[in-house]
Length: 363
Image (tube, rainbow, N blue to C red; front, side):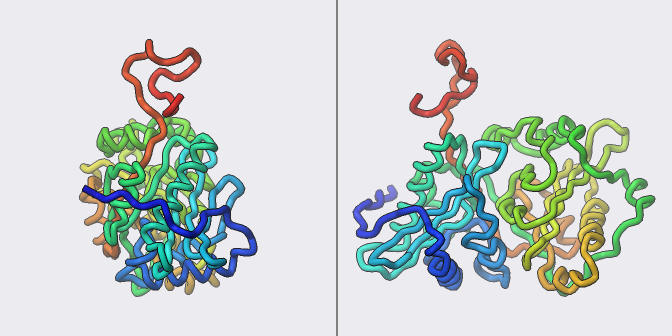
């Protein structure tokens, strides 16, 4: 049985201030250098040149007013930070950075991180958060820390990367794209995209992620469906989505989401498709489209950063199709979620005016 963490540590947790910027940047870098002991995130932080700090441009990159950023301070020293992003159209929060510096008297890195997570949960619930998401490497007690805070694990993702040693393929012509039944996604595809997601995603995961058709209608900047551990980097990218029409013209066989980085970080590629569908052409088109959307001066940067792609473990054989396109697995992360809604099976127990399938915990 996991021993409960002691809340009696000398420091305090407070909201971050602009005057903390230099200390936060240094803390983030220090914890990245000592990832196993200080950081808990759902990105590759070991065994790869790709680091969390370089991906997110933390600690204040793309920070929005409704996001949360708290620090742990002890003896006038910032020794921990947590950052959570809020999705603009859903009551969902995602913890994207969690750092705790070991070596302080009376406080371990684990104690600091646990206290910071508790602060995010309290702050999010005050603002009406319905779900809290996090993805972390299953090492150093990361998963246990979040489960102790009430999170439940519901899946795993493989993080795959296509490095600079392989040039991006040539962009496709319009004729080739049309012949392959690939076209740009539009809001009118929302129902078909929801049906595709339902067909490829296990029921327990669908229940937890609780996407609705309007979620698939919101395309463009900050469009984060389908969810992945790498979705926060979409704040730093120009996003486009394409669909693969079925051979009979009814419904969709595949979907690809592309994020062309505006910062010095990898480009983003997320594929979703039916298991019986050959997705090789869709992946090849996506890589070519990334190249087409880069100016000549950006080609060298694109080659230096490569392309990164998350793949759920239940989405096989998609991982093999990506490997055939030059990707390799560099990390595996665990997906966790905490709900603040209690689902009720008996509508008669729900107060008037509240949706019958969910009520806020404690109401």
